[in-house]
Amino acid sequence: MPAIGTVAALSRPALLAISVFAVLIAATLTLWGYYGTTVFFEMVRAGWMACF
Image (cartoon, rainbow, N blue to C red; front, side):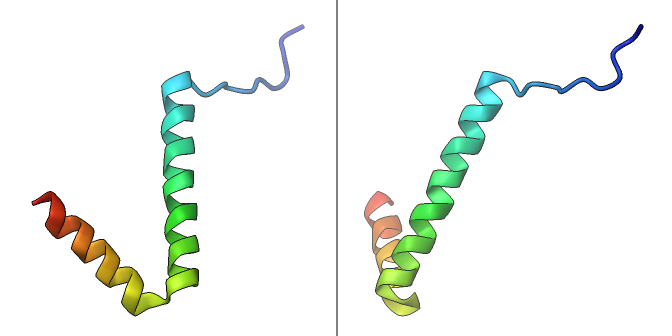
């Protein structure tokens, strides 16, 4: 008798990528909520300018 339903398991790299993305989104929303939009965007811009 064939299996009725199979669950496709995610590969380890895909699961890692999804986890990293979820952490980045959570950090972004937390900082945005804590500092407000103006300060948040200023922090992001200052960090971006420090890299380049």
